[in-house]
Length: 283
Image 1: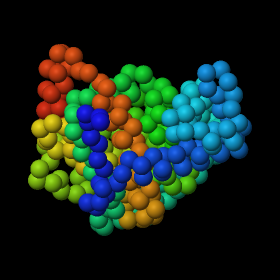
Image 2: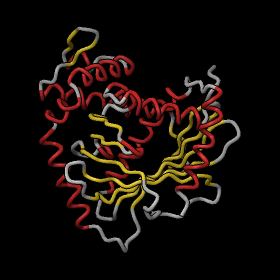
Image 3: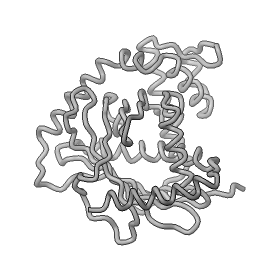
């Protein structure tokens, strides 16, 4: 029996890891088929694979094959292969933003995750490793529909992902922001709120997407209320799909985080960093 626990809930209902893995594998199959249509090579450990072979793989094999394939293509290569899709997604988000009514409440996709024996410090170390490695391999292992990743200064990220598992991959620039208005009031038991806005990477136009995660204190683990907020002009399917995107992404991230072992310096300095972030994101 494992000495850690990860549990996801949507609207108070527990979502099992088996359910998450089923959705995850279905998205791998989607991306493998895209690679076949675009004639992007599928390769692992020096060997090339056909799409039919990839579709028969286990989830773990599929993860490794796609991660190595993306890394071999490279960041610019992925942008080139998906340039038409990125343009269509730009137009979609521009339309959503142009039709947004700021006087209306935002639609929300909220997922709760709770862990035992996986700490916030360990999760921070995982995020730090993402930024340090700054490649396509690790982001692909976290979610198959992460096509591009670039860590920037000040905690910014430039990504390509199929946001909400809806239509085309989107080319987005994520900016953490102290000045971003909170779309909802944080829960009374929230210790720290992290919030940020999302821009189109091509032209830095505001998509009106806001990310707001609430971190809640727990003695022996982690409790986070993951939140993504879109204007009322956005299709409901994006919100529903993004709940599953978040669960796949954070489930994989937490499984990696559980093996991170902070040293004495990290145990000293990272809690101070958490307190500093909590203060910076206060209104």
